[in-house]
Length: 469
Image 1 (cartoon, rainbow, N blue to C red):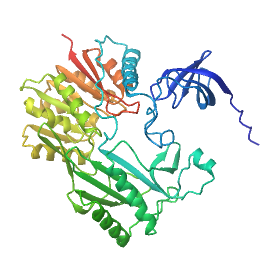
Image 2 (cartoon, rainbow, N blue to C red; image 1 turned 180 degrees about the vertical axis):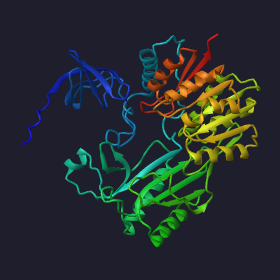
Image 3 (cartoon, rainbow, N blue to C red; image 1 turned 30 degrees about the horizontal axis):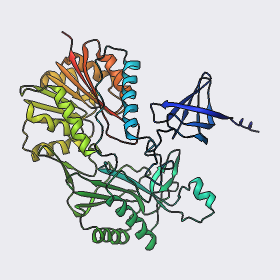
Image 4 (cartoon, rainbow, N blue to C red; image 1 turned 30 degrees about the vertical axis):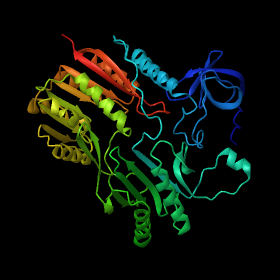
């Protein structure tokens, strides 16, 4: 017989003092650190513990004794259930301060190297409707909030919205998301209501059956709109009728695409993209450069901040027009093409073959003939032999995924010995680890955080490194 799990206590009159790295608030009770979601510095709360270890615990707010004067009212009706915008209850001025502290703490605590004064974070001009891309899931297993359950009201089982953390098969139905232009809400809700009205099945995430599976909406700063419907069954008539209805309701959509995905997982990177109507791509624009974005393309989700981020990277590169630049983890070549007019040549390397195809197209569209792109695993492509063949770089720009750079890649960079490295990161912790590895040959000259994602704990950080003389 299984041993009954011991009920964890409620901690009373706990003062929340700060924000932790992953977006939770933080408090100290005796010698124990307690991590609490949706708290604000200055709150005094009763905390119900969910997990307890020797030196730390995790819990949630059971009772609000006195709210922090810093608190603001979240604009979103789904706040606290969705989990996407965990900081909506904190004023934006405090959010950016927390992100600044997050960067400073990671670089000082993990890198343990000499650092210059870290520049003040560049905030986002828009704190709502800033995302150019949103992805939604359809499910026949709707997640009900505690308030909905307590109301005794009957709710339909279907949902179109976001996955609930820790419940892979449950989806929170979203009425209005404030992170994208409101057109995205109208499209999502129309598809959901059409499906209900016409008896179309919502996907069952346990059984992997059902017609409506996922929906991606991209709204570019140019005004172009891409909608990608993903279906879990091959039902030509139902698919055609729904896609025709979307086109009739939203004639402003410039790229209306769909996918029939019969796999277990939701990824569409290996799936055929079918064109219902319009173009196969949309375009973003920066400084007169046009960037084609397909349904599988990566592009920074905050278009206006992406321009600021790339401008910082270009400034840190200190290009005079004669440099050979390597752009590692180039994606669709956005940074590579953005800096190409200020240097002699750019070589971009990226793992995803489709992204490299987009990068080449973007160079061609913009009349850039001084770029060259290669696809493959970074540690396999970027070798000493590759550098001997293509030239030793004057500048390297690196923008790796959250996991940071493989140690083999760091070693090749050290052997290549470019004069400058510009390191763009979405994870200051792994960036700090890599900076410690580079410290044997490079000094950090400048650090510039950039906020791309208001109301979340995520932050981008750009570091400029110069080779030691």
